[in-house]
Image 1: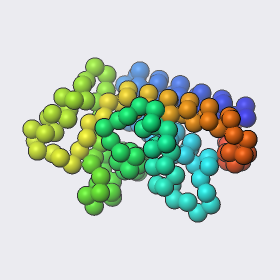
Image 2: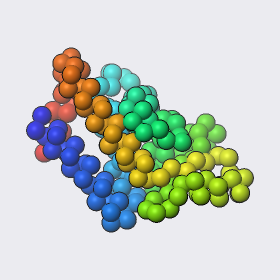
Image 3: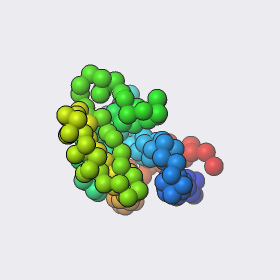
Image 4: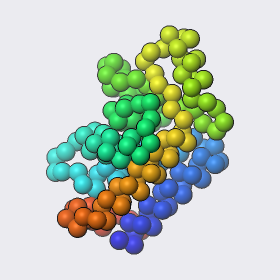
Length: 166
């Protein structure tokens, strides 16, 4: 479990360092990868990444801090960021989700959303990067707290976590 907590702490620290240094794309890559990693810990055999990701995001991230987007929109944003360094994804192209645009620093996501409305872009939603990071941190804390109180779930999660690199 030492590797589990060291890697968890290092991930959070790296996300914050990227944000502080204005390395926004690496920040998003680490953030979405983190959601992927923790959502995979209890994934059932054969369960799709999308299913595990959206279930974890609904259960922890979006409950910790409500955001103006859905878990599926976060998954689509994850696909865009991790695969192409863009906000584009197959789910967006098929009209199944809105595209996430990010405000950061002192920018106001509401102003970004207003700009989208002026341009008659109903296919996008603005999210502040700080809010997304805080939702992940708080959701992760809730997940880890819940996990620590359930021995059966700990055993399931410890298998993949036990394989983490150190």
